[in-house]
Image (cartoon, rainbow, N blue to C red; front, top):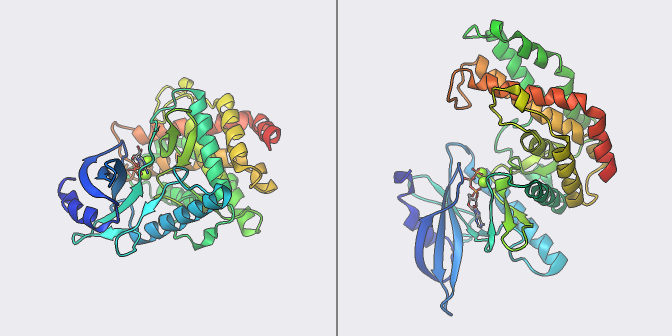
Length: 369
Ligand code: ATP
Ligand code: MG
Ligand code: MG
């Protein structure tokens, strides 16, 4: 890690941070990129902070496309805020260009660096401490959707191919099942049946899209709590950060993924399934916040499909864990025998719970739409 950051001084030199460089330190709890805070002294003696990040391009194979996405979306958001209230501070993540006007700096060892304005007096939380945190994230991601509702989503690069192409995930599962390279299939017939019985479900959203009934939106694709900044004083969400996985997709999938991990009472890899339940109260809280944030920007079809988004994102995630288990645990890191199988089981437990509460899930959407 240190070696890969040996070009940090070059990056600092090249990005257009204002003032006199004071110092630079590692920062935050991100798991993907290397994040630093850099401090600059201003003429009046005050200190201005910036975020400097080295993009993890082991994970992101197309850093140039990724940065075009980030630049496009952040500029659009800033303009939108300027239009609406003439003040761009703090309410969106602001990219700092390089001194020669580029969106990122590429050093001589092929690392990619970018700068952001530091959002002050705010914090990111790793864990939901109280229900209001979850509600705040719903508001923020809904608002993000609303602000970007007129963004030309089709111009975004597909930086991770077929990320939420659920029919494709299903096909890949079937292929792994046919190959069954480790002979594991015979012991997991119940899980396999669970997926096969739901083949129809995996197509619902894609079919609507093909019929022109499901719009392509700007989606965030990493809608967890610690990707929003919360105001230290008011406890309210300020804005969404971490736009690495921004791509075109379905709004209901962003919603669905938040529900998948946020409305479960248990950990993703909990072995005791009696502890893993779909919490309808948390689902309601998120739905309320998300729809308030969206403020009317979703179509009727999208609103109708919110419960489907929740179910499909959960099913898709379970399918991915099961596929990886069949293929010998090559994609998701495992920390114990059968870890991916345990993970798949929690997801399928949640899917079953949702199916049992299907009508209630619709009623909740109808209450807030
Ligand atoms: P993840 O593990 O969520 O994918 P990551 O490695 O992609 O994380 P980020 O989420 O972009 O990294 O940033 C890491 C942390 O740095 C954030 O959790 C937040 O605490 C802080 N951070 C990022 N951008 C800003 C900003 N503009 N202002 C203030 N803090 C920021
Ligand atoms: Mg993050
Ligand atoms: Mg990230």
